[in-house]
Image 1 (cartoon, rainbow, N blue to C red):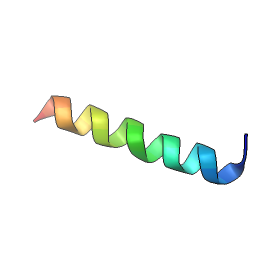
Image 2: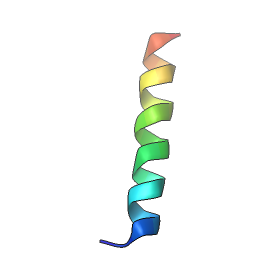
Image 3: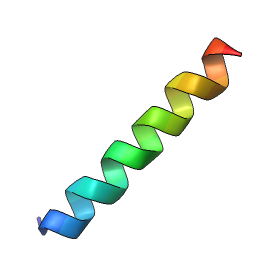
Length: 22
């Protein structure tokens, strides 16, 4: 796993959480 993969994964998780929150 590369650092960029972790960065993208964090963005996806954040977007998913915010999407469900709204």
